[in-house]
Length: 184
Ligand code: HEM
Image (cartoon, rainbow, N blue to C red):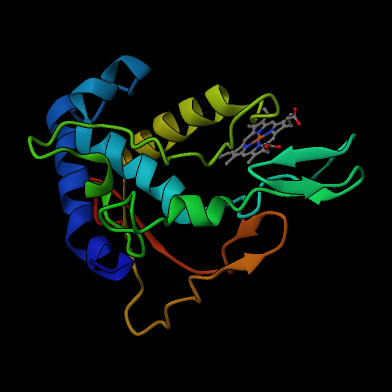
């Protein structure tokens, strides 16, 4: 499934689950994750596919290091290929396409594969991980609860490679926002 396919088909399942569990008015809380497996899986897939820090944050060895048989001299710049981990064909059911099923088991329950490492890991793991994960779930869920997003007709799809630097960001794009339950 491409992202375009998902935006036309999967998005409805996303809306349906949010409205069924939360209704139109009750704002989500982190206690709702378990009751919203498809939503929670979709938020994780957005992060996996978004891959916003493709090579982690650069570090430098402070001393000569031997790692798995490789000699790494002091002063070597080291970065983590998070892109390779987040799209590893041996670890993901759908490595190259947008598909929340990457985070759902056969019974539709949420699970997190060990290769989900957008915040890296180890002593220098992202300090904002908990805050970022909480914000992503609450913001995406409450936006989708209230707004119906759609793609303007006859508009060219942006290059999904985005603008790549230390952080990967999307190209500018336009999207239609309908307040749910109204025609505005
Ligand atoms: C989706 C959002 C975010 C992603 C994907 C992300 C990802 C990362 C990654 C990959 C690193 C490098 C880890 C390493 O050096 O191995 C990092 C470092 C860091 N992040 Fe984030 N981050 C996010 C949001 C945030 C937020 C919201 C904050 C602060 C409130 C934050 C604070 C930091 C800090 C302080 C470091 C440096 C940690 C250190 O070097 O010890 N990040 N982040």
